[in-house]
View (cartoon, rainbow, N blue to C red):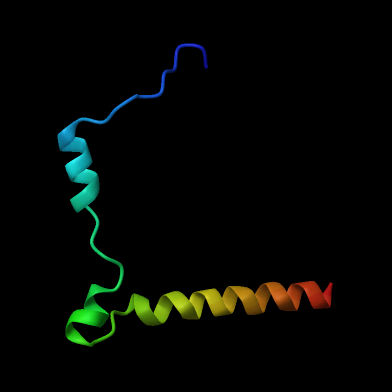
Length: 60
C-alpha cells in the first residue's frame, strides 16, 4: 500500500501498556499450586488434534 507507513516509535504510555497488559502464562500454577482449567484443556486439545491428523495421514 503506497499510503501506509509503519510507525517509527511508540509513545511511552503505549510501551507501558504493552509491558504490563498481559499476565505471565502460568501464574496460577506457580503461585498457588493449583491448576487452571486451560492447563488441562489446552494440552488435551493439542493431543487430540495431533492424534486426528496422524490418523488421517495413515488412513488416506
